[in-house]
Length: 298
Image 1 (tube, one colour):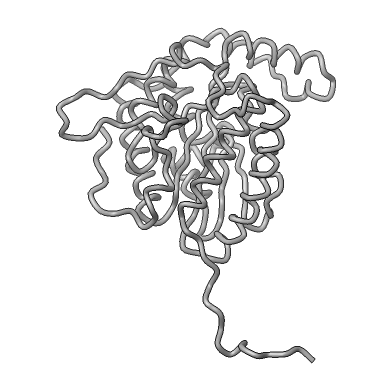
Image 2 (cartoon, rainbow, N blue to C red):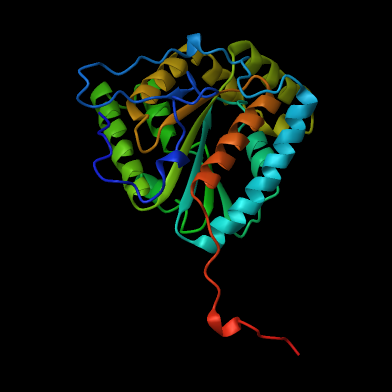
């Protein structure tokens, strides 16, 4: 079970999503305070409407304009993050096939410099990776100081796929939850802000998006017959998502469920929360070198 934050984190807590925020209420999975005597709040994805648009202005055109403005602001803030060098940002995008992980990356981070923003798309582990513990490959790709790393899928695949397919026992699944909580705590306590987004789409929305991939020659390369088999396990995957959202939303790395049937709203919500996290860090440029004062280039 997640513990409380025993010591102050090296970054402002305002950089993390809050379940108390008006627009985020109900979408940020708040961990139950240790010692409260209460059980952890149950997560039901069936009760979270993937068509909801809590961050929308009510106008799709205005929402798109805001996404562009936010992407420009994120670019400027990322430049300051790089120059500041005190913190790191890890953005985790987790979701079913067609949930929109690629589209989110293009829209939210498409204007940022590749010098300070990297992306990893996680696939099934290779043989050398399987020869190590399952977090070994993940730890090699976390962001360095001043950088943003975006995970397209993540270490949470290791509590989804093996669990749904029965490759590990329920006890091993719970053990992995504890491993992940401790791993993310290590990251947070050493200056990494961890933002975790679960892109929540509906069953029928996924069907439409998979069909679009099949029908469009420019998108067909994204389609795999395995996607059809995984879709048959929809209910099992939804329950597995619910379980890890409950078990791994911690005070140092809370989960945010993003209603993502609307691609524009998905981008707006995530871009807003990334921007807010970077602003909350109170980033600054390094102090001026006194030796440069009054210097003129001939």
